[in-house]
Length: 341
Ligand code: 13P
Image (cartoon, rainbow, N blue to C red):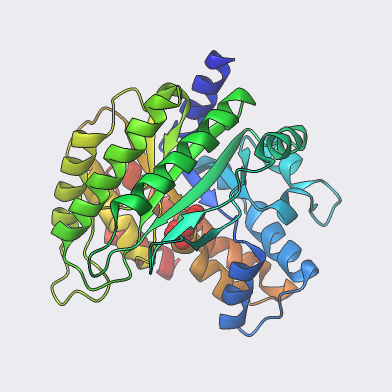
């Protein structure tokens, strides 16, 4: 069992590949569809995921896909259930299992992620549906006097309880503590919040006997807040990020798969490339992007069957660029070549 968990975790970060996060909850996907003027019906959500998952050659750059509860039960247009379609392509199906970030009592402006009640039974069902890994996202907010120790501790505790239950069920837990980049803080503040968070998360994982060789960490990069007047360069992001992770993430963890968190599409590739250009690290450093892989594909598709190929070509471009960034071989020219071809 432990050997299977280790093998799945390694498979998810092998061959310069990364993960496509396509696990938007019904509320989040509605927001994305609203932005392109598309109604969020079950069929539109299915057709959108069908477009993404049938992208030619996707398995060259993408090792796993995170699904949502509705999506793992849906099928491609030819009737093949999505988990089977992905598995047949050599892409590991995964599942978001948290039930969202809710206001944390006693901590104004901060959130705690819910979903532990009944989780063992839900994991059994997802495993029977074909999932081999899972995801739980905790949200840490930077602001005046926050994050609090209370918020960090409550989220770290829940992440570790989730991770232990996943491993019991044979699913690799993706442990996602996201320090948001939405404020106007500088990069050093992000470094401090990320350091405190990771320290608490690994302490809880240890307390709750989680096997670190059978997890993947999905963190934010150490980066300037969106509203900060001085934005750190890709080189600075890479240096702060590697410093933070070398200080806090044990070498037993096989892979760190970053979230994009609101970075621009090309910025997310550039930063990942800079991180991987700093030389060998104890863990593979790859991606588990949602918006930074999907945004141009969603816009090009726009809900029309006529635009399926256009949407797929944008997903393929972003996936190829990010896979190159894992190898430290991404360059802005890859974007130009793709645009002109
Ligand atoms: P973003 O890359 O859009 O941040 O999404 C990743 C994710 O899965 C958040 O939980």
